[in-house]
Image (tube, rainbow, N blue to C red; front, side, top):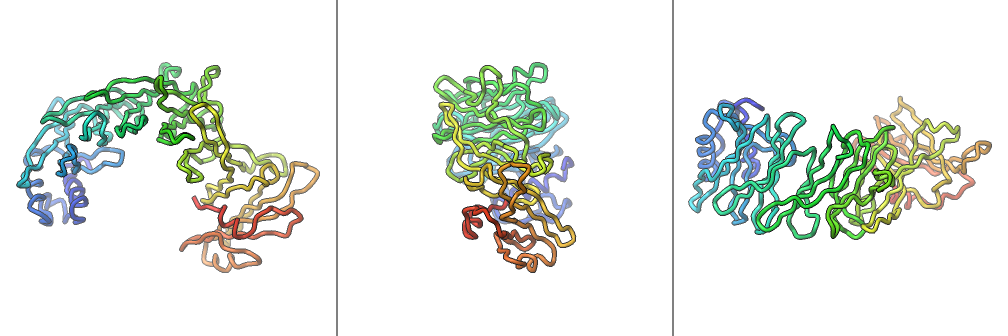
Length: 439
């Protein structure tokens, strides 16, 4: 993709946006189906600008086409942005911005230039006053060093609004003004205590540093950074990091009256201890679809032999509010290897143990739920089995005994069976289907 033939991808991206047509080969670089005169004019103009330079694509993010069409000034006509590398210049990374007139003719409006090895990513967001969209570019200086720059394209000129190094970033509306703020996650390898999130906001027609808040001390590596909502439906940034001992921790940031705040950070321990948990392969999500993001907090489900080697986890999903309070809304058991999870009824909490069964030859894997209050002298009482069935005989296996189907597709059947038990688990077949979910 670094060769000149990358322009096949450039034009494929263009036609994907405009017509859905594809190309015929690298020997016909700009000889594409003539879907419109405007397309032809754009092709010719881009080729004249690029010359012998190399077309490139942003490395990551949601905008990775080599040629992108965006209505930056919100006038109803899309601008075209072409990405390329000209290694003969001091600033080799280029973004050409082309505007279209009423006759459909494209002209080079401006060039944005950067130094480094690649364009890491690009986003288009309204950052400052006015309807226009700004251009947020991450320049990859080295594989581990990036510079984030926000550009304004207004009044017939391109202006740099802010520039900063960063580890990761998120552009989102934190304060409800319908414009995005920039949240920069900064990891300091030489001073881990300095790990933080910085907030940049639009003030008039400029971007300014607003405030910052610390990340938990002791993190090993970032794992996930995403926007969410607190209990009051207030936007937040949730940063999940890896900790020692195969643990995860989530720092929750929101914009308070005094500035950016880490809601979950304990001022004494300097970590968000309330969200510290065992790694179970689940992440913060809106688990109950109420518009609020829940944090998964883990608790080991004890096993009958007392070893805990089966590694079963009860996950309690917690909502956090800006006043620091937290509320449990749901408990689940997640089986990530078999791609399903079950909402646990309240009456089951602290009353069950789990075990696994597997018949490799028939493509049958199962988890058995048993009533057990933790007394090692009293064996558990099985009351429910949930099966994942694959293989050619899955339909027959799903119909065995008293099994019933929870969910099925063309490759997999999830089935369940209530077992004869002296314990009333409190749910029936209909309720179990409601509580069962695929991942």
